[in-house]
Each structure stands twice: as C-alpha cells, then as structure tokens.
Image 1 (cartoon, each protein chain N blue to C red):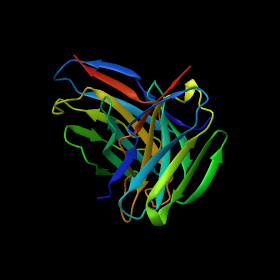
Image 2: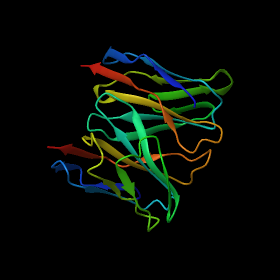
Image 3: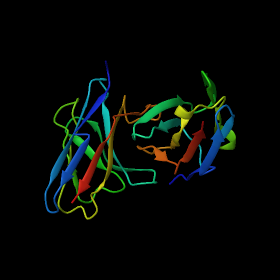
Image 4: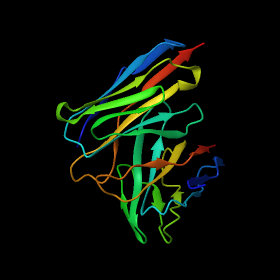
Length: 109
Length: 114
C-alpha cells in the first residue's frame, strides 16, 4: 500500500514564528487531507487538497501531486496551534485514507 | 448543527466485558468509519461502511464488531476478544467511499479497561 511520511516528527516554536510541515507519499493520490488534532483529541479538518494551493487565515497548504508531496504552512503561530498535525491520503482503488504518523507541534508563549 | 456525535466520551470497562460505542451523524453521508488511536500514534482503520447493511473490515478488525442498520448510525462493539482495548476511538464519515470523499471526525471516545 501507499506509504505516507511526515516531517519533522516534532517541532517546538516560539509564539509568532512561522513553520512548514511536510508530507511525502509514495504513489499518486486522489485525495489528500490535513488535520489538526487538538490536545483533547479532536481531529479538525484543515484542508482538503489533492492538488494545488489553498489558504485559510494563517494557514495555507500546497500539494504537488506530480512530485508526491504536500506542505502545510503555519504563519505567526499561536499557542492554540499546538497539537498534532496529520496528513492523510487516498490512492488508486483504495477505499480508505492512509494516515501519516503526524507532526507534534508545540508553540511556546 | 450538522456533525458527528460520539458517546460516551469516556468509558471504563472491566476485563471480559463487551462495550458498545455510539456514533451518529446528521450530515447525510453514505460512508462511515471507525478508527483506533493509541498514545503517540497515528490512526488505524477498524471497520468502514459504504451503505446501510454493509460493512468491511479495516486493518485491525479482530476483536471488534459493527452494524449499520441506519444511515445515520454506525455503532462499534469492543468485544472481550480484543486483547488491548484501551485506546481512543474515533468515528468519521464522508459523502461516499470514493476518491473524492472528504473525511469528517467526531470528538472521540476514550476507552479504558481496568
């Protein structure tokens, strides 16, 4: 099956800093989503982005499907951005999303 | 508001007991899913259902059972056969099990076996 690798596994930032999270995948994808898991465990949809670029406030994402990666940009980070960021992809005839292992982000005040 | 409701949020169980976790959605989605998450880990698929009265095993179905009698509901039973049931369980839904189905999650149920 498809492999999904996220980097870095852990990231610690000072409030106000910018960051880039990366998701590499091993095959072509039809669906790619970014999620934020908050400290209470809830998974929040950030972007549905199988290709192209999207922006939502301080967050933006870019997927370059031909090169098999996606990037999540967080600008002017806030403490509430802390949590785990997951990338998940759907490939070919697969019926389920495959999740990466996540990036643990900690934003310090 | 439209969404996915899971209950209970926290559940304690004695070894040897079956427990059922509820998942209800009012998004009119055809597909529903159950995932398991262990501490510090990603999500693993237990079961999914594309349509009423039909469901498929995911990667870690052993020790679990599901039913899909109504479009809105997809309960998960953690049976006594599940060797390590303590985990965080997440229910999700999408318009369909298709290449373009965006996945939405409930708030999760945290099960602890004593």
